[in-house]
Structures are given as C-alpha cells and as structure tokens.
Length: 266
Image (cartoon, rainbow, N blue to C red; front, top):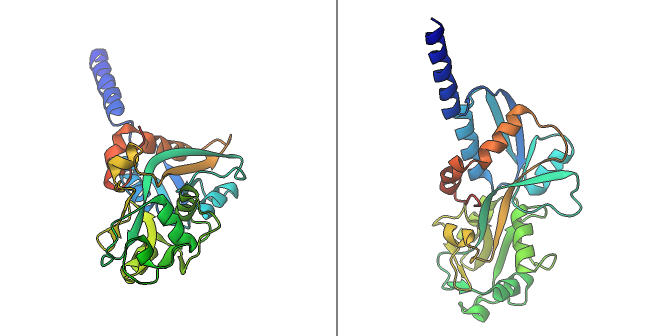
C-alpha cells in the first residue's frame, strides 16, 4: 500500500510539472490600455484561462495613457501600453511581452509604394502637402492618425521625430478607425499596428524594408515599438496577476503572440 501511494504521488507530481499545475490559480485580473495590443492580449487571455479556468481576466481597450493611469490610480492590475514609459511616469514597472511594427498605410489605389523616414516626417508635418512631392499623383494629402495619449501615436511620432509637430486632418480613437478612414480615402495616409493591418489598405515599405515580423525582430524595420505590461513598482501582485505575467513571458506562448501579429522578443 505504501509503495502504491508513493507511485501515485510521483505520478501526480509529474503531471503537475507537465501542466504547470494548471488550474491551481484562482482570482481576477483586470487589464486596460492600448487598443493595439488587443489581438495579443486577447489571445494570451484565452490560452491562459483554458489552463486556469478559475481565473477571470478582463480587458478594457482605453488607450496606452489611460491604461498606465489606471495602474497608477489602482483601478487596473495591469496596464497595457504600446509605448515605453515616460520619465514622468514613475513608480511603475514595465515588462516587455512583444514587439510590434508600426505600419505606414495608404489607400489601396495609391500608387506610392515606398517612403523614407524623411518623406514620412515631411508628410505628417505639412512640409509635403501633395502626393506628387513624394512620387504619387497630383493630389492633396490627407493625414490620419490617433488621438493624443495613444501609444501608437506616441511611438510613431517619437521614432519618426515629429513629436508635437504633426498636422492631422483626422485624429481617431482606435487603430481600426484609422484603417477604415484610410481605406475610404484615396489620398489618405496613416499608421497602424502591424498586428492590425489587413488587405483593406496598402502597407508601404519604409526605406525599402517591409513592415513584417522578421524585419521587426531583426531590427531592420525602423518604425517599431514594444508592447508592455505595466504594474506598480514594489507592490505585491496577486497570485493570478503574477501567474498571467509569467505566462505571457513564457517561451511556450511565442507562437500565440506570433499568430496575433506581434513578435515575442528573444
């Protein structure tokens, strides 16, 4: 009987190791923030809760700035941001879970295929106001972007070097809205997370490099940013929150993140 008990104990322990003791964690985790992280975070939540059915995770797509503020104010357990923390955003920890390219998108009927960083900056600051100036048709440029506080906007403007100098015709509150606006205007240009782009618009190459998973990972695509989970520094996280962050960093979820359109950093 003692020998049988020992065998059963060893088998149970082995199964726990294989499944990472899935289901042992319970509780709730509230997340909020970047709309650009939606596909990635939704995929991670789905996979995590399959293994941990006693954990409920919520996601509120409020934008990066709002997500960071929610953690600062104690409203959310995890803030989701598609930009780095600013120097003024203190008392917080940032955990990079994925890398994302910011694609430059135009209408499918636009004849332009490639732009340099300088040309992109010129278009978004109003230095170039006609597509003819960058190799396109003789037509005025319509600049579409995200609202202030958006991580995508912050990432784009800081990388391209046009922070506070952009002149927008439309400032929209979601990545999907930007894509829809560009898709409906032959002479529009905008930017969107790589994970969100589709055949509804055309993605330009930047200085000859396509916005793609491999070029983001190897660093050859210039306009890219991190997806981060933001938590309070020095504050003990709940078991469920800690388990979810550890899950998001596990090499086992690399394919999940890839299928969601982003790349797990190596």
